[in-house]
Image (cartoon, rainbow, N blue to C red; front, side):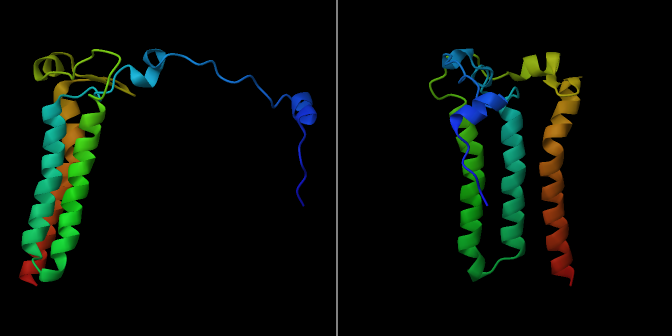
Length: 146
């Protein structure tokens, strides 16, 4: 069913390669910029929409059995906001600061499809959280009317 591969056979097939060279953490591409290239206010706005959605759902579907699940949801959303923010500032070997609002408005950001102006980037970042928030309002409104 299964066969053992010995090292000689793997070497003959060219499947054994040299291990990667150890580089300092500052030289690795994923450690150069840990601030996500967006101003903190924009990221806080996105998480503000998520918190607002949870608040609408909590108020709209208020029940004694939902207290613990909603508290857990709030804790998770807070963790999803806090952990990346903390990660961006933990012992960085670089001194790159988060993009301030003025620089963001002047330059925009670089995306996979090319440079994006600040207005479009703001729309891209806040569109999904805003739609989720509006979906929560629609859901609670429909539940209240039925």
